[in-house]
Image 1: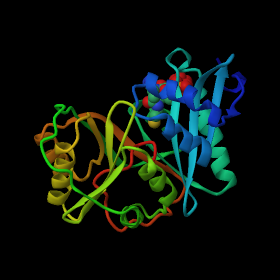
Image 2 (image 1 turned 45 degrees about the vertical axis):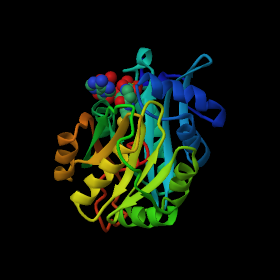
Image 3 (image 1 turned 90 degrees about the horizontal axis):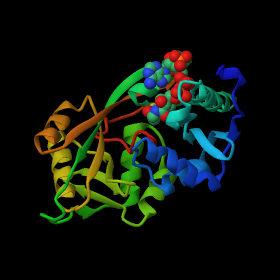
Length: 273
Ligand SMILES: CC(C)(COP(=O)(O)OP(=O)(O)OC[C@H]1O[C@@H](n2cnc3c(N)ncnc32)[C@H](O)[C@@H]1OP(=O)(O)O)[C@@H](O)C(=O)NCCC(=O)NCCS
């Protein structure tokens, strides 16, 4: 099918959260219905239907300082290689261009093949790691920290004000913000595993110690999206039983706007940056 002749690109609403979740679940992603509601409520989500069925999506989530995150680029298996992802990302880029936004995303290897030709260039690399846990708690939970402390640290590390996003995460049942030795992290529920991130620390030892304390106090499988250039952190995680599941390539289209003062150890997730 020619990309130009395809079915209409439409704007989705909060009523499409469950249909969006079906697409991310088909791709074995970890998003929850609540995650979809963030994109549908605070951003713009484009979709393509085949009859009544939602078969493809892409989301644009605006952040501060003329930046936006593109994510949830999903096409159901039977409808791939027909140009649907390209059309939906184009729709996001068109919306971003109107508002003069620089676009960022974290691409899976398949996604990077779509975004490169659209003009995105690689910036940094991430690695998703998983820890399969025994169902018993083996240590005390780390101390809790405030949302303000997490938002301050996030602003220093990303150059973005993501208070709205982080507060939405923090308010969910099961979310906790934890701290030890100057390191701080958010832990929240996902569809299939609990997610650690973002995680900030002054040094690798503190970052690893905090992950270790979180793991000891959790009973579910855990995921973390680690910044690949924090190589000692990655080595420490794999040495303590975490396995690398997949790489993500961070990419940008537009001029660099956000000035970061420190490097995070783990991000909030590829869908949020
Ligand atoms: C990645 C994904 C969104 C691509 O959707 P799609 O609608 O098939 O993509 P398009 O048809 O627009 O592809 C455009 C071009 O990208 C490249 N491309 C896309 N998927 C590819 C693949 N699996 N292998 C090689 N090239 C690929 C091709 O050059 C393709 O053009 P062509 O078909 O004319 O050769 C889809 O495979 C998917 O949902 N995968 C699972 C979830 C995922 O990884 N999403 C990306 C998140 S960053």
